[in-house]
Length: 267
Image (cartoon, rainbow, N blue to C red):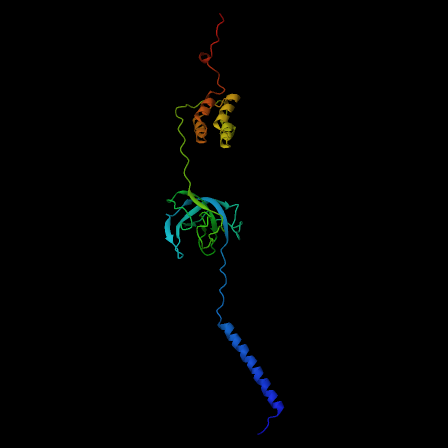
């Protein structure tokens, strides 16, 4: 039997080892290439918590999304909007809010949002999360209370987003006409409304003064208010009582002789 030189055997062994290493590296590369790449986490559009008012532009319609949750969707035009004091994590409080174009409202009925009857032209007050969609229409969602009614979903159901709301703004009642009270003449050049005597009473009422406090003020100051019909209407619209208005009509006017209290004659 012919013996192979040792040097030849060692060289053959080294070649086999090297070939094995190369083959292993190639197989590892194939495994890496064959492994499915992890999809990148979707980047969320810029958002901010807002409180605002607007006008309904389209009739609300109820929709059901793929997650089987029901929503009330419609379009509005915001007349005013500003960031809320409490913001969700990651919010951009400097995000520009569209108050000229159309904004879509997505009101979640399955997560505690109350059903609300709205028509085109109605005024609403809304609080939720405003989302700027770079290639779509801006929207407001999370307009429901953060009470954890949704165990899963975007809001986590555990109060990750501040509570919101959606409600219809009702018009103030028309003030009662004051046709029974004639205009009282005012001499001199007409001053601005803010300089008219009645304006102090109107301002005090709007700041929270009670009618009892206003009545005491009128009776103690003896100011001649010379109220006009529009001024009486403004006072009533602000909640000033008829007793206060009647006192203002009497205030500062000279008492007629017939109304004077007679002085008893000594016997």
